[in-house]
Length: 164
Image (cartoon, rainbow, N blue to C red):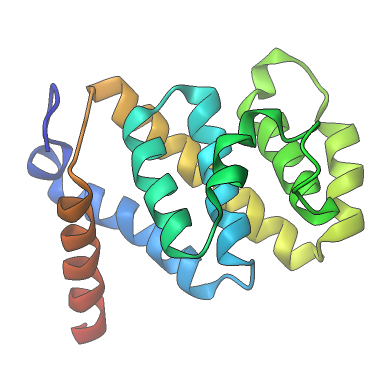
């Protein structure tokens, strides 16, 4: 991992807990993996996080996402390849990621609740919060990690959790 600070070396326990929060949410989530990756990609696009874009585009492809849907994601409102459920999730993602720009989240919430159960709304909102947090850590410290390095770290943490 390259960057201004190696966050995992500087604060290993905290960073492992932070990483574990995303892994725990992913494991417990009933949300479709493709939807989750689209949300992570869209938030990372808005936040300009190249590392997260690289990682989540690769993960989306691994989960069967098409190149077309990855490429046209910034224009999701005009692209006919997204479902109404995905559109509601993407609108909610944008509203929460751009919260400081205004209060458009009420309209976004109306679409969200039409397509997601209350439990799914919470899981989606936590996913959005966690990816926004990762974006801020990665962009703030100028981090870049090789995809294989990220996978190895995630697998090591998952293995540690399985033993514990």
